[in-house]
Length: 167
Image (cartoon, rainbow, N blue to C red):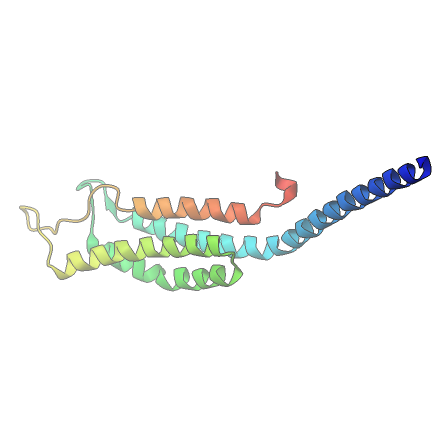
């Protein structure tokens, strides 16, 4: 009876040891796979972030300190100048994935497109003018939605690049 009990305990210990060893090996394989994906993804995510920051910086430069407004024609033109880089790098992020990063990147481009649309509609409507005849531009935080979407994108990209070693 004792021999059987010792055999059962030994078998359970062996099964438990194998289970934990297999779990560790599985975690190691997942971590190695993420590391292999990390560098190409990091480059792709970085290219998109750079294109977005260049477009955002160009939009911020449209701001006129004197009038405290941004000329809607210049906003429209600036986004048009950066549209191909935004679309090209968005496509790369969409192919690279995962979906949470791709969706966040799409939201950034949507924020740029929404701002473009606002400027376009303003320009097509003729807009209003100041007393001296200058067109009234957009005032306030006109790039706020772009910045918020970029912040979310950056958060999602960092999550996707994280490995067990980062935690």
